[in-house]
Image (cartoon, rainbow, N blue to C red; front, side):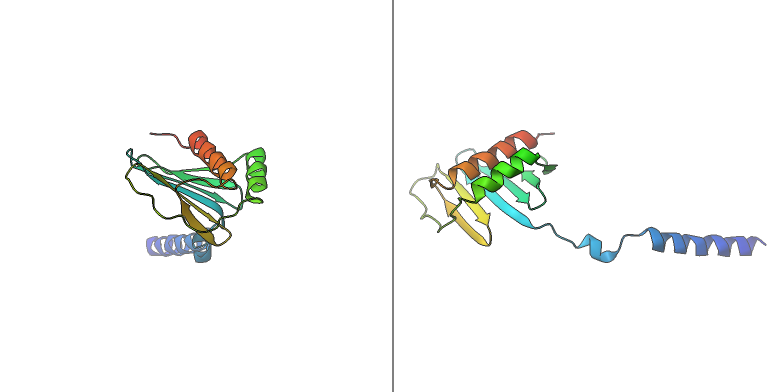
Length: 140
């Protein structure tokens, strides 16, 4: 009797684990990136990153501290998409002489470029992504 109960419990555990386990494919699904900003350099050693996905959520990280995943408000994502309509990524800028400069790297629609001075079409996008970083990233 006891062996029958043990066998029944073992088979029930196998069935439950098989039905409750998520499919292996679901674990490999990646979000599609809408836009990414990286700010690096300067005497302070910046290494900040903001990724906004097409679903309106963002991943924010800094050189120190946690990586934070948050979703933007509807207004924030609409404003960002409006700025992105005017964005021209263009080419990377040559590295300037000296050591105290910040590198801005933007990636959008398969194009990526690094700049040290912000072109006019970059300014609203960079400013908004910096606001997202400041609003949603919080230290421990």
